[in-house]
Image (cartoon, rainbow, N blue to C red; front, side, top):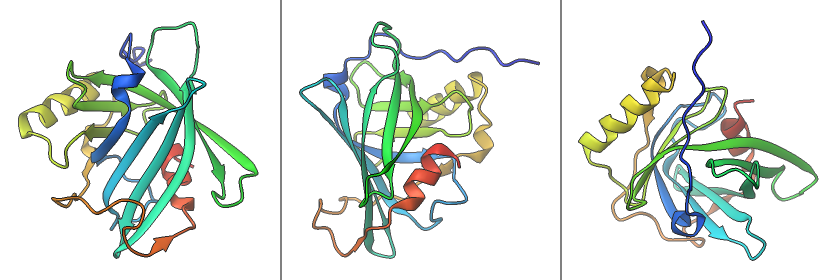
Length: 186
C-alpha cells in the first residue's frame, strides 16, 4: 500500500524560523553517538536568502559540531521543503552531501516544530526551549504518526537546563562525521 503524500507547512516565514532550536526527540541513527546530549541547531539567514546551519551536540563533555547551508528545494513553491547541504569532512570541504528537510508542523508562535523528510527514515521534534510540554510533544508524535512515521523509533534527547555555553563550550570533536551520516541516514 502506497503511503499518502506528506503534508508540509505552507508559507513558512524563514526570518521567524531563524535562531536556535533544541532537539527534543529524534529517530536514532546507528552512526549518531547514543550518548549525545544537548543537541541543537542554530539557523541564520544569509543575504542571498539561503540559511547557515550550525548543528551541535555534546558527547562525554566534548562539543561536536558541523556547519552547512539550507535553501528552498523549489524557489517558486510556498511549501516548506528545504535542502540541507553539508561538506564531508567538515574541515576539508570537498564533497557536498545534500539531504531533505521538510517542516511538517510549526505552531503559530514558531516555538516548536516537527521536521521530516520523504523517506520517513529521519524525524526530529524541535523546540525553542530545552523542554517541551508533554501534551504538545504527544500532539507532534500523533502528527508524525498520521504522516506515516514509525513513532516507536523516537528517542528523547537529554537537554541540560540551562544549556551549555556557545562555541567555546568545552573541548571540541572536529570530526563531525556522525552528523552527516545521521542526518542523511547513510
